[in-house]
Image (cartoon, rainbow, N blue to C red):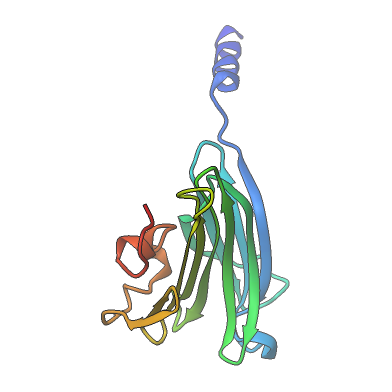
Length: 192
């Protein structure tokens, strides 16, 4: 009995890592035709973490829970975020899953939209949009916009288009992307 009470008290004393569901969406990767795999996506945040987690389940049947097929534990930044949600955009080329983050703190405010698509049995980042207003000086804020079209290998930074270096399949593999990938790879500039 004492051992059970001790185990229970240790279990209760351990800090819980509560995961909070931020957003959930469902759709079909083929878009409105519903001829592709059905999916369910969830964006969540775990207490004490700075990033959000994206999980995607695929199924041939919309009524089935499906199997977990994608799990990225740092897809978007959770710190300083005031809006964190998922959206499904149906296009002629199928559905695009958007991970949307709006953030604000004493230094800046902005919006990030990462666009993913399920192509050839892989999750690929097909687009990325970053907008920020950096409060360098209150009377002189610095705006930045970076739009990536990863299908066509282009970046438009503050209205100026340029070609990205050649992108292989790993460069657009969503498993390898997190909230800072576009900056670490030099696709988007960093404001300081």
